[in-house]
Image (cartoon, rainbow, N blue to C red):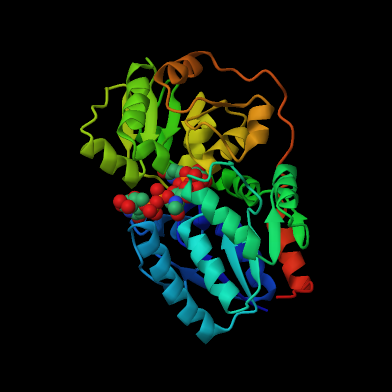
Length: 355
Ligand code: UD1
Ligand code: UDP
């Protein structure tokens, strides 16, 4: 089978690190990197340290408004699919690279497999929510990580070829944890000796709104805690543009590789984030997670008491940094760490596809 994997953003590289290896055991994989993320520390570092096969194509699309970015991806992906004639196109998550890949394949009647299907925030203002709904509705294999995601699909009338297989990010953390402990020097490099909070911020709804970003920065500054903040370039740009001042308790560092990130997560007292992936990783590692959003797709983590939604309210953020402590045992919502195996087994069986 010829599988064309389409990716372009940081979390997709991390997910592909476990899935691509499995695909290649029996199949030919053609990786198309859209170039949505292009800085070395947003892209190359993951391919190098996680030994992800080198992309066969890099479209170098780069940044831009949604239509420009998605449209250019669509044109170039279509060209490649026409040439490569894959049996299946594989897309991950909810980015502009996801919808561009799925749409290009759909119009060419190439079956689509969507990994991380069925996630919903129920906030259609988010570009990610638009991308995931649209992708799910044109996909042929829907790999749902959790029971909630499976139910969400059912409610939208999608039940055929839905497979609840667990979360590939859980596979990833199990697979790379040991390597992270051996290889990562981040704790000594940052001279970390005491407790700290690990923070990440990149969601458009937080960065593009000056009052929200101001509130979040104010909360970090006034938290009284050491905060380590590997900063996404989007957020760096807006912090400079809005001229926001960062206090000395907040250590801003460049985006880091996955192995360093895992070490910072493992050693953190708590995690503060608006990232989807980081919310899950906090849960996998048993770290209290404070989420800088009003809603989350990973609702199980909130219902289980390990994640609290605080939006961009400075008072709530500071209070949670100081007081939020999960009380319940963590349940297993995300599978057994064999999601990638299951996905590839299902694809290899070549279940019926009726376009
Ligand atoms: C994208 C996804 C988001 C995902 C995130 C993962 C969409 C709509 N959003 O958001 O769902 O959570 O990736 O990190 O697809 N930039 C650089 N260098 C880079 C990449 C980006 O400087 O290598 C800057 C550019 O100024 C760019 C901005 O970051 O305009 C935003 O990048 P973009 O890929 O559009 O969105 P993300 O916020 O990364
Ligand atoms: N991550 C990383 N380096 C960083 C920040 C995040 O390796 O500096 C990893 C993180 O551990 C997780 C993934 O990137 O595996 C999450 O990606 P991101 O937050 O960019 O996107 P989202 O998951 O919100 O779509």
